[in-house]
Image (cartoon, rainbow, N blue to C red; front, top):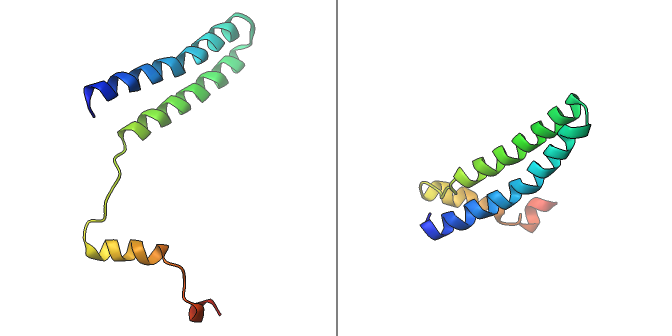
Length: 83
């Protein structure tokens, strides 16, 4: 990933965290511990999924057999096999 892209990604993540931090702060002032724990779990799952998604790399077929299988699964079934 280029440095310029990393800067924008970091900025987007920081801006995404800001509303969660503000809401978490307000919840901590007035809500019960259970509510805060549920909110924290939701935040951890959201940001964990985001980080894992950023780390995942798309895979290309390893050889021609994999490529042919991928293409054949996308192709519509012929009229004879539909009946």
